Length: 233
Image 1: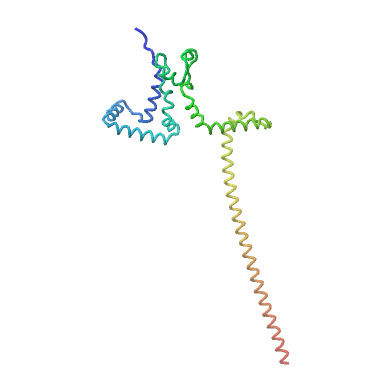
Image 2 (image 1 turned 90 degrees about the vertical axis):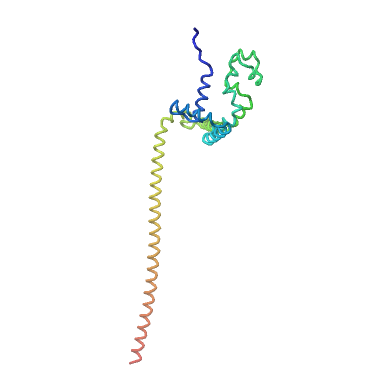
C-alpha cells in the first residue's frame, strides 16, 4: 500500500478558504456551516450573485488591496491557478508567455514568470508613489553621507531610541501647551494693565481739566471781590 502524497495545491486551497472566510464570515460550528450551505443552496442564483457583488463592494471599500485584487483578478489569475505550471498539465501558459519547452526543463518557474509584462507594468505603476518616496529618502541619506553629517551612516542605531524620542516629543508637546497657556495669560494681563493705565491717564486728565476750571473760577471771583472792595471805599 503506497503512502498518500499531499497535493501541491493544498497551500492554494488554504488561501482560498481564508478568502472565503473573509468574504462569507467564519461559522462558529460545523452545524452552522452546514445550515448556512443549505440556506445558500435554496437561494436563487441571481440573489447569490447580488449578495456576492455587495460583499465584494463592501470589502473593496474597506481594503484597497482587496479592491485591486478584485479589479485585476484576470491579471492575477495565473498566481491562483498554479495547476497551469505543474508537470503533466496543459501547455497553455507556456504558449501565452512564449516560453520554450527546453527552457522550462532547465529553468525553475517563479511567481514573476506567471505574470505577463503588462501586469508587471501595472504593478510598478501602482507602486510608483512608494518607489519615488523610497528613492527620495535614499538620495537624502546619500547626500547626508556625502556631507559627512554626524550619524548619517548609522541611522539604524537610532531605532532603539525611537520610544525615548517619542516620549520626549510628547513631553515637549505638553510643555509647549503649558507655555502657550502661560503666554496667553501674560498677554491677557498686559492687555488689562494697558486698559487700566489708559483709564487712569484719562481720569488724571479729567481731574486736571476740572482743577484748571476751578482755579479759573476762583481767580475770577477774587478779582471781582477786590474790585467791589475798591469801589466801596
